[in-house]
Image 1 (cartoon, rainbow, N blue to C red):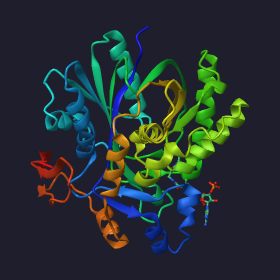
Image 2: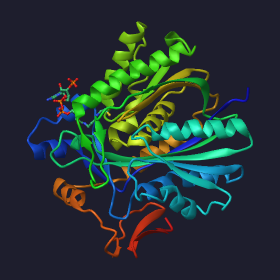
Image 3: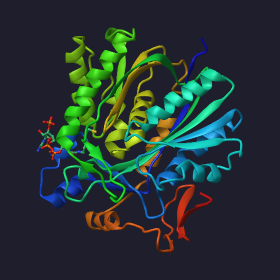
Length: 385
Ligand code: COA
């Protein structure tokens, strides 16, 4: 059988950052609740001229530069920060990246799980025709109400992945475990710019899901727990991965060890929650911070509130860590411009209505910007950066 999987992967994030020590001090609480209790250090925060389209296009740009567009007939955009009820955000990316008109575009939605739904669809497309390659973009802005328990777990970022036959990074194995249940732990009604969340319920639902997905994987003849060299998890906050890993260890009865939790959360601690991109940011973090993973099996757990989850596995390919992504990602994270808490709160409270034409201020240094709204439609520009 042809090996299919992730051939290349790139991250992007926002212009701004908020440090969680500053937020805790503003709130009059111990910063260790965030740094140790939640395992989060910073929140990426978009400038007024950034959104999921500009982050997604910025993540995909270097992938297209490295591999060209040949064989790409599908762009799948995963997000729970939907910009339009009808148009897929990926269509704007298609235009910004100047992709051929022979590339189909669609948007996937199921909370933070949607990137994995896109990955599964991409694997199917490439299995049908191994000459095709699929571009996946997972891009999100995690926004909770000011003062809510979710506030320190905000964040923003995008991951672009190229899925192909004979992948250079990670071959995805065919068996996966799925667990779906109708739970009201987190959702965002159409008339709300922030998520409605029952945080405690979402933690319990996540743990039930990891056990349920494991049982489905095991029941379908998936790999033994002993063969898992590392695990990466969807990380609404990095401590959640630790809770899930302990739960999976208890559930399988197998000592899964440290499992790469530390190396797999270095980016996530600094980006905050990136919803659909979070699991793949964790995968990038793991691959970028460990040198001897070639041939290893990695377990990947994807969770989307509401809920749909999936546990699947991949084999790391030889030469996986030679792309310089770690240096690029660190430079991008370091380059973010810090916000003070007052400016962050001001930015947070600003929302746009499609009823008013607007031109956004020029702030971002990314290659693309959200330029504004005209006649109820969003428009974007290349910045020349
Ligand atoms: N130093 C170190 N740790 C501290 C601390 C301190 N000063 N103060 C509190 N903590 C620890 C707590 O013991 C707790 O650890 P534990 O989970 O291992 O028991 C952790 O910090 C969080 O404290 P808690 O009181 O539970 O936080 P909270 O109720 O304010 O918020 C969530 C936690 C998860 C409910 C909240 O962040 C949230 O709603 N997040 C959004 C939803 C989400 O991400 N869900 C996850 C599944 S998708």
